[in-house]
Amino acid sequence: MKKINRRRFIESSVLAGAGITLLGKDSLAVEKPLYSNKSERPVVITTWDRGHEPNIKAWEILSKGGSSLDAVETGVRVAEDDPNNMSVGYGGLPDETGVVTLDASIMDWRGRAGAVGYIQNIRNPISVARKVMEKTRHIMLAGEGAKQFAIDNGFKTENLLTEASLKRWNQIKEKSKDTNFRLPNDGHDTITMLAIDEDGNISGACTTSGLAWKIHGRVGDSPIIGAGLYVDNEVGAAGGTGIGEAIWRSVASFLIVEKMREGMFPQEACEFAVRRVIKVSDKYLSTDGQAAFIALNKNGETGAYSVRTGFDYMLTKNGETKGIKAGYELK
Ligand code: SD4
Image (cartoon, rainbow, N blue to C red; front, top):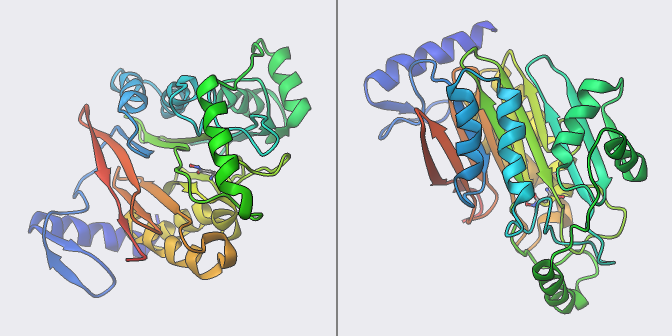
């Protein structure tokens, strides 16, 4: 850990002990401490509060001394299997041609990474991404090749388009008639999960059906290491959700981890990234576009922040899972 990091952690210990939170470079405020003063682990943090089940499943593994890698894979698979989550896996909303295409990435504490982009007919792309990471010399497989790789590794193929997502897609089609660039902000549920295990090892997973009504062939930020997800076990991890093009332009997850390396707390780093994303996003975040981030550091401290109101996340510590509303930048 660099000198500056150590100094900030020590400051946080002293201040949190006194009930004082360090909010920015120079500002202090007495309020509920945002940061713990000791290492807390295991910890699981997940984008969006759409039911606690993913975190609970991840916690089951972590509480038995399991690895953060197994925890994040198992946790996000719950969302992939859930037909009511229309942004992930089975039941995900299709692209403008009515085809469901999925993106996913995974990273572990050894710095290993795996991803799949534009994969079809496989409901658990996160597990395919893990296989890419563990069994190949590559990081990402896409499209037909990714699907074939999945089949060769025992994954079954199926139709991922449910009746409900087809119905929703038809409604979106109607709404999107006049927006040739992107659909109106139609809700996001992409799941990015970060976890630190008992041994202090950090992993992350991110999985999505991407933006509904995207152009056929589009790949978003979620499978792009550094954009939708990044893990560096010396420092921490970060992940995003929202308009992928805006997130990708800033390589925002990598940016957050690098800011934590320089000494920022997870919360500060998420806020920094949101401001950067707004600055460089150009047309991508116009009117109602959302981008949001979560982060976790080596002490088990967490942060979350979004461009606009509406973003929440799930945090599990000491076996307790809570849905929490995140702060946002554009008031
Ligand atoms: C994408 N970032 O494909 C994803 C979409 C998303 O919640 O996060 N939806 O751009």
